[in-house]
Image (cartoon, rainbow, N blue to C red):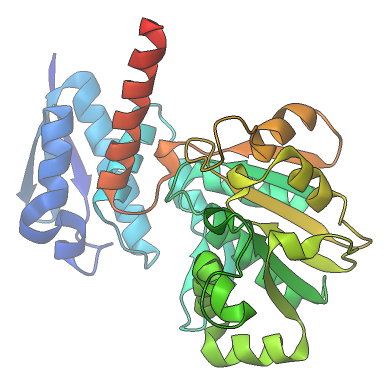
Amino acid sequence: MAAEISVKYFDRVTSVTELFGTLDANLRQIENQLRVRITDRNGELNVSGEDAQAEIAARTLSALIDILAKGETIDEGTVSYVMGLAGKGEEGAVVGLLSDIVAITAKGKPVRAKTTGQSKYLKAIQKNTVTLAIGPAGTGKTYLAVAMAVKAFKNREVSRIVLTRPAVEAGERLGFLPGDLQSKVDPYLRPLYDALFDMLGAEGYARQLEKGAIEVAPLAYMRGRTLDDSFIILDEAQNTSREQMKMFLTRLGLGSKIVITGDITQIDLPTDKVSGLKDAMRVLEGVPDIAICRLTAQDVVRHVLVQRIIEAYERREAEIKKKK
């Protein structure tokens, strides 16, 4: 049956363009995906269409208005994500995320979970000593881990932040690259630097680095150490070997916390080597004080096209498996 539902916005949204999108792109996106019609009548959006679809569209619009009312912005990805939740009656979960600020960047921008998957990830880090985050590119695995590390450091829960990742493209044999050690490893550690710069600013980062409160190094340099009172992040962990992963996990010292991030669909190891991250997911499942978080394409917070690309590859891989 056809239905018509009204959603008021005039007294809650300061900028109609932010709600509608440039050239009404947000409204068109909802209309096209749900096959409804949305019209603006004196500060109210009227949604007409089949009962179920119109209800989802109205709940989506209400949630988007709530997001804007809290001073946040929305984009194509936000609209798509909220629509998906509205289809399950869970759109209110997104609005609830906005009140939980993890950190403030050097430019004053609040950092918070943007999806329910990210929210579960942050809670797992808070609750557990070791957290493994597995998911595709763009799900915020590294950025949120660095935000939590900076938060713990500023709250004096730890005295040091240690960031590391395997330099697998160079086989961890960096001698043939030009420059000193720092110049050799910088290209592999750049994503970690970027996240730290965003959180602390270039000057704040340099100051803490000079004091020894921040350490960024390739995984090979973790061997033989015990890291006490530290927040330790291992990034791109899908490119570790079993031996490297075990070595890294056993660096854990008193008062420390470990976050391991990776994407098991982007393993750069030789085909005869087992990924240390995939192995750890099996070995550590069910171990107390260790959480394994699985983020999906629905948690991608980059351009909405990234989500579509990931989903397209997942469909392709599923087709290949069926043929085998």
